[in-house]
Length: 374
Image (cartoon, rainbow, N blue to C red; front, side, top):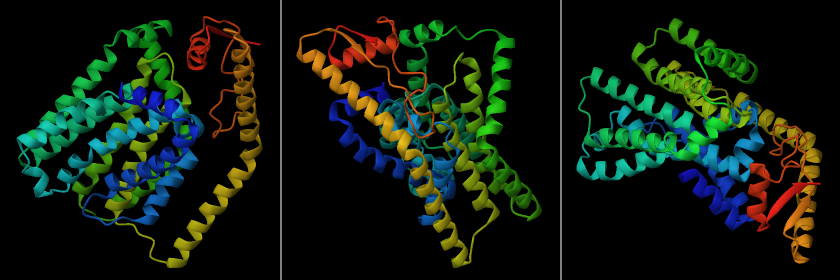
């Protein structure tokens, strides 16, 4: 409900307003990943923010669908924003911030509805959030620290939001239409496919995580500082392998998994005590990132421009038919370029079946009776 409310809101506001808000939202997402990795006791680190940006930029399999497409961003960018914003008090509590530990009933009154909203976002990332909170709870109990009332209230809210989402009739109808959960053998097959894709999509980040882990073990650091990176890594694995319950896993779903993974990676970097002290190396790294981004823009610009032109032409065609009081529209299906930054499906976004849900959604958006691919 929260993320689809945002999708409808942005569609109503228009693409120009969405573009401005979405740019700030993406910047905030990178800042929140950095915050959860380093904690409230560390000052803002611009190079860490840039590292998050680079990780999202390079490793997100369907960047356009996850962060640039209005509906996709509403689900996957803003869904993770809600989750990470909700997690701020828990992350501060993990730093043993006394001010948050002392808040009682007033904090619970706030955290309960916030937990419902965070749990009512996406099935896999919200489920991972619930597991993450349980791990933080066990960690705090193991340290023999008091657990404030708001902690339990937020946890209960997440559970309620998650239950509201997965038990909704529309959720069950969509799952059934896609083929259902299937048996154990089918779920194991999906988990194997997910593992192969994990290696294909995230291999640079996985290698870096393993390298930092080895350096951490050889560096003689306190083992307790490894807890937080492992908790976020577990959350990422939960968000990923819970998709074995689903008959479909579009590439845009991987962005939420990546967010948890990047927090774990940077938290491990922080636990290792790693820092690039040489200013020239830092400047060179920033310059390289800028050059790569510009090169990527230059390479993809033509394909993205063609996709935009196709959408604009179809919108003009739809407006012309509606102006002639046509209600059963015949419109071109838009085919994307196939690039990671192109949100349009290369196979086309509507079909020749007016009853297909994609056609029906476009017809409702345009205010027409039906839409058929020409």
